[in-house]
Length: 75
Ligand SMILES: [Zn+2]
Image 1 (tube, rainbow, N blue to C red):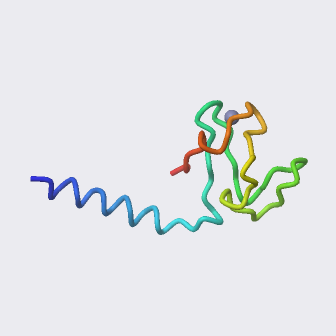
Image 2 (image 1 turned 90 degrees about the horizontal axis):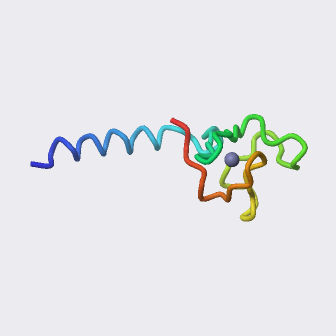
Image 3 (image 1 turned 90 degrees about the vertical axis):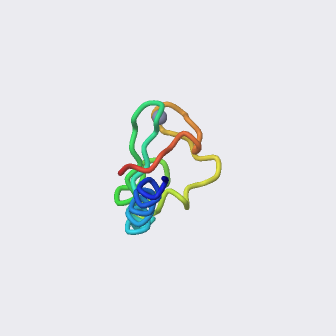
């Protein structure tokens, strides 16, 4: 009975894998600010090309101060 749902999950999984971490944009679900690895964060010491995963553990949204856990991948 769950065959169709499983297939859907696999498709989503494949899509996720196709996006390289270095290009993955991350969105703050609190305020909507988006981290774009291609841009980095000018003025915050985050250089262009740095994937979200490489940001400091204490990184916070420059706009609202939300912690990393509030960021979700932009699809
Ligand atoms: Zn924010």
